[in-house]
Image 1 (cartoon, rainbow, N blue to C red):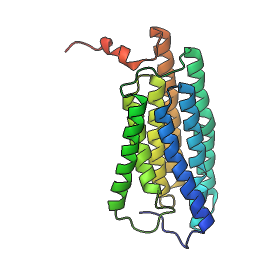
Image 2: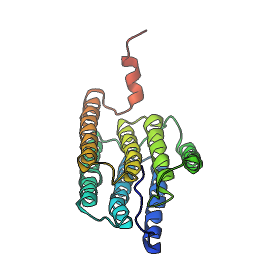
Image 3: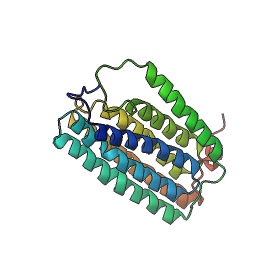
Length: 230
């Protein structure tokens, strides 16, 4: 169930939340449009910074500010704003690969498909019957859009690093869905999700590093010849 708000959201807070969610959408499109790996990682880091303030905003809107929201914000900032981007940028520096070249789906086409996904997410969310009042009418469509765009990045790029970013953006969409259940999900479960994300990215970084060491590239398409013949 969505967390019901105990009183109407002040207009200033409502505007700030909506602005943050719109910025999340714009950052999704920016990640689809850029070819530079470092820029893509920094855009993801900034998106996580924007998302990290939403638990506090949700708690404020429901008149239930507590340690729960601050733990979520702190965990997101430490892991997804600083630590994970640091690991990924370090992998790029050691690999000496700066750009995504000739992805499965071009950058312009990716932005067009991403915009269509956003439109579809808004259409889908308008059909959902949700109990209670969310902190913003944009929360669910932005969560669906972020999840879909993360999946698009994951399947449409060659570089393993960009695919890791796609996985992380997809997780951001799941995280936004979790904000609608902020008061229903135990804190330990949510922190466990953050830990799973960190461990997953840590393992991916190790795999990408070894791919680079063994094959002198990070293009996953070049691993296809390694498959056993049918």
